[in-house]
Length: 357
Image 1 (cartoon, helix red, strand yellow):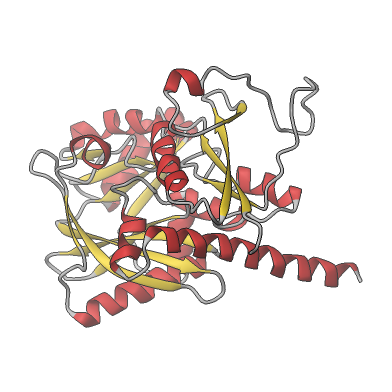
Image 2 (tube, one colour):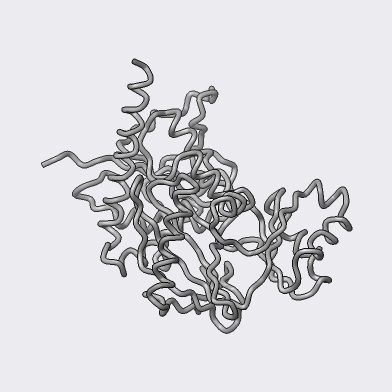
């Protein structure tokens, strides 16, 4: 029998999605077959310091007990231990984990890791850059304006005029570099715009103001490297208390209904799957991603909302649920993701070896 592979899970982190990351890591930890994998768990606290722990199931007080240290090369504390594993799996959401920073660290270390590399991760994290890229590739996105904090502070009236010239309520205001619907506000009147922008600026120095639609929402999971494949689609139907699929709806109230597979004409579902793969390839992603869609109820037009390069892995998260509905249960999905990480690393090594000859 082959020796078990050692898989190191990174979770926690400095972003507003810290708790979601811990919940995702618990689910990944539980679904790594012990006959195939040895598990190492690296908790990153809200200050960005790292600690090896026995399990993500530890209480918050035990996770934060430490001792903590930095794994960065200029750490002189002498407490850092070599973090050796066969594959590394960042189960991190938001800035500092999903944006290419930890992926760059792992690429510098020349080790295999699950998910997209530095470029794909950073492009998938910044919604402003992502949507400009999609538009350049002919991938449909809703009308939007990107606003930076210095711009809004320097000339707030000019920013509002620009938004009013191209958009109309309802609008959605959101941070450019965050997920799990953190910091998002639905704006129903112009009087609500500036407070909504202030709320989004609490989380990021760049925000998006997007045209709201009367629409249905769908999600699709993508898996692969050079030849990615798309799952079945799910329709997201928020509960009656919330007007959109927000953080409370996702993680606290659980009143949302999910229809898998989504009830759509086959031609529409096929187009959505093609667009999901196109978005994945446009961002040069690898391993995994979840692509979210809107379908306008009036025009029936599909729009790509965003791509998530480290989708949630909680028990209610759509990425593993979509693949389970498509015939790939969680443990087999974990095997595929680890295999894709090793494949990508081998391919990259061959290219580097060729360049050095």
